Image (cartoon, rainbow, N blue to C red; front, side):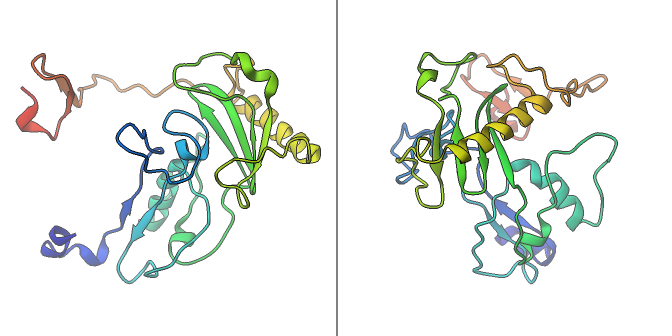
Length: 230
């Protein structure tokens, strides 16, 4: 932040602080009472804070309960920069600039929880339905799948301690419809669904790697770690 001020960029720079997943918890728990850790679909494995700062544009001290996901960054930053993402192919994220600037909106009515290519859970509003209890490395439906699905209300029970599936079969049925929708468009390795909207990954002609490997160093070093590249 001091460097932005020194360079005279502080007034026109958006600073975002967030994470891609919950804590690993191998060095002491940092998820509070949330259930789970990195590499599963409990809230402790996925729920993270997001801090946003843009002097004079983002209201200071405001707290929003609006749910965003990482794919919202592309259309959001494009909108704030006065640009528009391409429209030839679908973009999964939505423009959240209105929320950042002080508004209030529901950006994602439903939300799929994938682990790799397998659909593990789906959320609608405050309700979350756990379909498969994914753990790191699983590529097929687990043996304990007969005990699922499990249903949680994240507004009343963000720590996912009270399974309400037996009490609210109507909500379970609605979320299973949502799960079928996501399988149809994104696929699901657990059920074999291919996904109608999946497309090949992008390819770059004559690519230049951004990382290198030093056999004397146990870690891959990013390009900006020039002193450690070897």
